[in-house]
Image 1 (tube, rainbow, N blue to C red):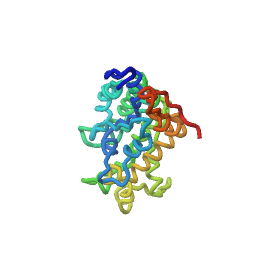
Image 2: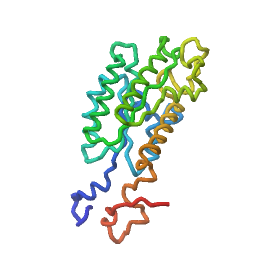
Image 3: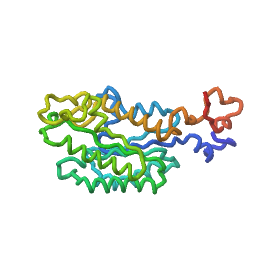
Image 4: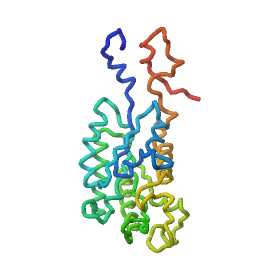
Length: 270
């Protein structure tokens, strides 16, 4: 029951139980980030746990889609995700792996990808999203792909660099999955590039399930990098900096229900 005993909830009550959001928007890497059955670590559930009772973490990933598809999906998605009055506190844009593909139904020239990605970032801002973060495409392992492809690792790097340029031009943070994953397997500049066909084994198999998609350890890299960006660039979105949705049970007066449920929750400073 709402304030006053009516069965119709008050605007205040609705607002108090509304969870604002972190929205992850991208391709199959985003889509599979919720997999709790075959991965040792899952990005989206881990973020949902980190933000439980503070923010909703929503992954909207579309397998096979590239920037030419997702530019049409962005604005309807933003509208749908805020239809009940929610605010998107952070938009994480993960696009590029399919753009770098050689398949006609997916491939997007790097300059067009750059334009599409910049459009997505700017349109999100014009739609009221204050914080945007870009995640660049990571490497692939050419020998793990079916059929094997050649020169795809360095091709992905070009798209990663394009994404980095867009992020810099738009003034938003960037997660460099390509270099971070390479460094995780011990690669140093000047050495043979892991993932290139003929370099001696599938050294990226710890991070890639099939040469493209992430293992649990791959998603753990994304998770760690994302939290590091939040700590550095958006400290107001750290979990400990956010109030809970509804007060702690010990702060609710059972003799004064439901009014004390709708009190404004303050962040407790340790």
